[in-house]
Amino acid sequence: MRALVRRIEAGTPAHRDRAVDGLRALALLAVPTGHWLLGGFTLSADGALHNASPLSAFAPASWILQMLGIFFLVGGCASVLPYRRRAGTTRAWLGSVAAMYFLQYGPYAEAGPSWLSVSDWPGDPRCCSGR
Image (cartoon, rainbow, N blue to C red; front, side, top):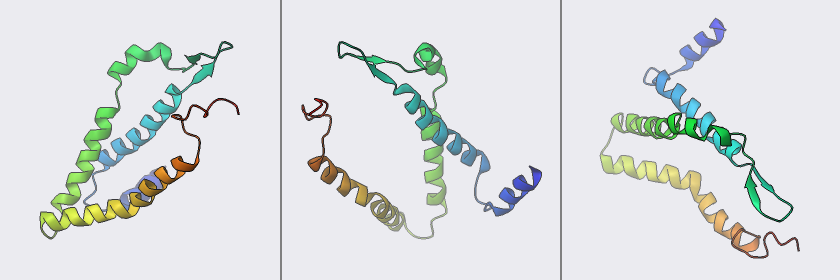
């Protein structure tokens, strides 16, 4: 285990904050897992939807154990660090970030509406009719 820790430490750039990276990893694992666990619905015999989430009994605990704040805190920290290391102007940095996001997420922004136009989606009354 120590050898693994040393290898990770040696491979981590000096400007990276391992605490922020650890919190990001925790948030990136906890938020989708929580959403997955909350998404348990069952259809009763009369056709009504009921919540079958295993976390339903722990709703009051979820008010205290919120991951959303940590998720946005470390996301903001991860965003400001590259800004502080920028070499050029703020305008040039914003342009490079916008280009990076467009290249990464642009295809999804175009594919989503295209897919919805040819598929059944929840707004369509025929979506769940069993046709």
